Structures are given as C-alpha cells and as structure tokens.
Image (cartoon, rainbow, N blue to C red; front, side):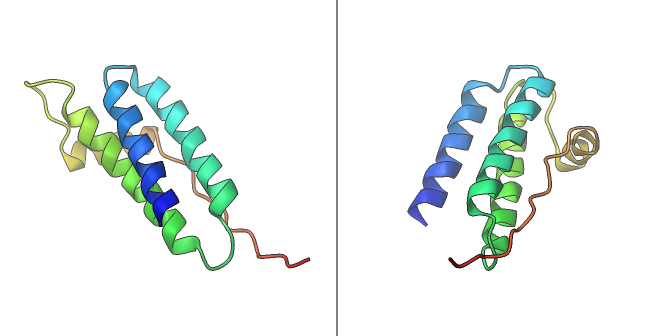
Length: 99
C-alpha cells in the first residue's frame, strides 16, 4: 500500500509540474508510467489494484488539466472525448509463475 500511494503521489506531482506541457507529451509520459507500473505489479491477484492505478492516473491528469486555465475547464465529458484520442494503455495481467 505504501508503494502504491508513493507512486500515485509521484504521478500527481508530475502532472502538477507539467500541466502546461502539450497534451501529446503528457500522454506519452503517462503511458510510460502506466505501462511500467503494470509490468511490475501486473500479476495474478493484483488486477484490481493495477486497474485502480490506471483510473487514478486518469483522475490526476484531468484534475491538473482542469487547472491549466481560469477560463476554460476540463469537465469529465470533455476529458472522456480527449481520452478517445489519447487513451492510456490497458495493462495485461501475467499469470504468477512460481519457481
């Protein structure tokens, strides 16, 4: 649990510092984060936490995109349209192999 929280805190901090970057650049970095998290933690029995991580990364991304400007807001319906173009990768769960 501590590692999960630290990972999310790092994602939120990154989103906060890079909220004014181009969306394509943010998307590329967040995809790498989600893929890396899934590659390390994506084993049998951990699928719910990996899916939750991906969802919370999306929430953090939308939260900081919403704070890019005072005039235009990033509402959920607008963010869902953005996710159709810039979707985060689906994580594959590997079967646990005991040696």
